Amino acid sequence: MTTTVPAIYAFPEFSGVAAAVADHVVAAQNAALSGNSKGSSSGSSTGGGSNTPTNSHSRTHSTNTSHSRNGGGDGSSGGRRFKIGLSGGSLIAVLNEGLLARNDVLWDKWDIYFADERLVPFSDPESNYGLVKRHLLDLIPEDKPRPRVFHVDESLIDDAQEAADAYEKTLIRGFAAKDSVKLPMFDLLLLGCAPDGHTCSLFPHHPLLRENLAWVAPIEDAPKAPARRITLTLPVICHSHRVTFVVEGQVKAPIIKTIMERPEKGSPCSLVNEGAAGKVSWFVDDEALTGVFVTKKEYKMQVK
Ligand SMILES: O=C1O[C@H](COP(=O)(O)O)[C@@H](O)[C@H](O)[C@H]1O
Image 1 (tube, rainbow, N blue to C red):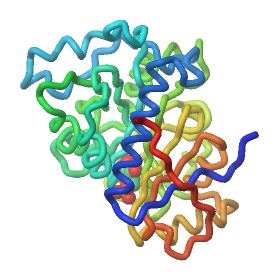
Image 2 (cartoon, rainbow, N blue to C red; image 1 turned 90 degrees about the horizontal axis):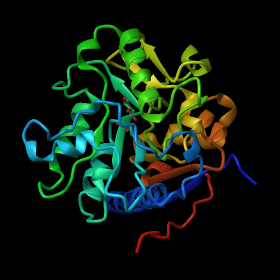
Image 3 (tube, rainbow, N blue to C red; image 1 turned 90 degrees about the vertical axis):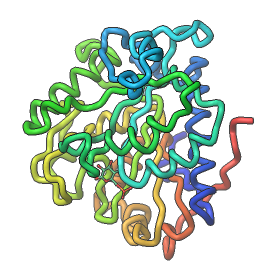
Image 4 (cartoon, rainbow, N blue to C red; image 1 turned 45 degrees about the vertical axis):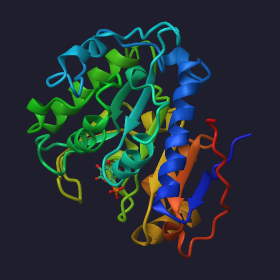
């Protein structure tokens, strides 16, 4: 039986959030690579070898470039890949602290996609890919293998529709032909929630919340700068095997209260809680739950 009430894990400190999120990610990785992620038949875990992903280190570490072309892995996971979608924003500091501290992240089995992207140059501090590159990918120890990274085409940042169409094609190549699966299925999507209630680049009350055909949609009028962005759509988000929100800080408490206690208000995060019911987790610090009445669960580390 599923429930629209998500699992909510709260921690007193940022470090607790970071450690638990990292454990949750590695558990999802292990499940995907061992074939235990549901839905692999719709393309969640087989390699998308025809893509030409960017290897984040390929320019500086040419000995690692083979990882950007090899969709097959080393055989121990039967060629399966861990398909993860990352958001930008505060999430990346959590991943920096949590993931980089672990030695069981099988980076070379990861296909990293983006839940949304702000259409600015990668060097701009607002770029989600730029943030992930600087604070995560570039910091993977040199002796570790590299993930495959599928980011927006930087040459298309002046045209949101073109950028969205091109990124949708990237997903189609990575997951399966759009006419053979209705929706791609990520093994794990990591999402944030902004104080105004947006997640990915889906903003409260925006018509994009009703998009049900495209996998990736453009937005030109985002209420928070930069206005031009692309985003995964709600059906894609809700089709993921796991959807995990990571949120900290008292500034987020009012919106979390609305999301959890007033789902009828239709906040984008409430729509995800409902649309992905049974697959949604929230990892938060205690401050983000100030004045919020929810049942919290104790997080038990899954990976020994
Ligand atoms: O604009 C964005 O904001 C959200 C939330 O960011 P946060 O810093 O408040 O966690 C983020 O998840 C999204 O990827 C980004 O484009």
